[in-house]
Amino acid sequence: MFPVLASEALLEVKDVKTYFYTTTGVVKAVDGVSFTLNKGEVLGIAGESGCGKSTLAYSIIRLVPPPGKIVSGEIYFEGRNVLKLSDESFRKEIRWKKISMVFQGAMNALNPVYTVGDQIAEVLILHKGLTKKEAYNKVYELLSLVGIDPKRAHSYPHELSGGMKQRVMIAMALALNPPLVIADEPTTALDVVVQAQIMNLLKKLQKELRMSIILITHDLSLIAEIADKVAILYAGKLVEYGTAKQIYYNPQHPYTKGLLASIPRLKGEITKLEWIPGVPPDLRFPPPGCRFEPRCKYRMPKCKEEPPIIEIEPGHYVACWLYAKK
Ligand SMILES: Nc1ncnc2c1ncn2[C@@H]1O[C@H](COP(=O)(O)OP(=O)(O)O)[C@@H](O)[C@H]1O
Ligand SMILES: [Mg+2]
Image (tube, rainbow, N blue to C red; front, side):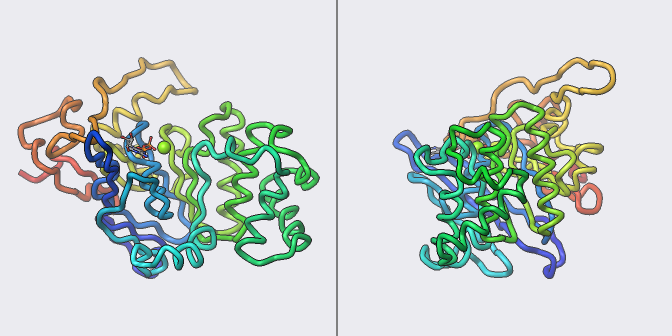
């Protein structure tokens, strides 16, 4: 769907489908998603709650929880199809070392009975075989890298603010210096000032460490300043992809336009907030064709069929019948 120079590609996700086999039906949480992430790039993935963002992230790091399963597709990392690796090889060679993740809500999952230093050290001891002393030297380094006083290594999670706990989670994700970090809604539970600080931190780290980041959010406004590329996910499918500039200044898909119109403008005059009427479909019974069709004010009979993917300008793709040549 999104061709790039092969030499620059770090991650290629090709037509990945991940379904949850529940007792009440098959939830098609990720249903044919494809994109490419280049080395050193920040890709923002945005969409409403329930559209499959976390499931997509779990698919890439191969931690889809039961009753979920990656049913088809390919995921290439540094040119290797990592879905073909055994669980053990993936755990040894890829997870944390090559691809790490800051899980949604993870700051509240820090173990209350261990210091944060011990928890970061554990990653280093487990994966790199460092001694506790060696690991702690790295812990101090990592904490200062994420803007925390290294002395805080000896604090317990409850002694830290939400923003600091989230920085600890980021430090943990960086522990093995992976080329790709996936951050799933890393600032959702934080107030706006701290949200901005964490976003700035991610941007700074990305520049310093030259890593790639996939930044997942339900709030499109959050990633405007940090993402190079933006992908819009709706009901398990990508509907638009382009550079951040293309998506923010020249959105094409009616859903992307709706999402952008619903962002309150902090500067300038207050404009009426528009929201897209209706709710996203039940992913057990998604509508045939374009999944946004039932909510779309531009819908036409053709939209009952799968929309084509159209390159509207170089590198800017949209899955919508509106732009199909008659
Ligand atoms: N463990 C699970 N069991 C069954 N359904 C799930 C599970 N996790 C997620 N889902 C369903 O998959 C869809 C996508 O969820 P998720 O990936 O968490 O979305 P997002 O992160 O965008 O909010 C939702 O319909 C959700 O109910
Ligand atoms: Mg999620």
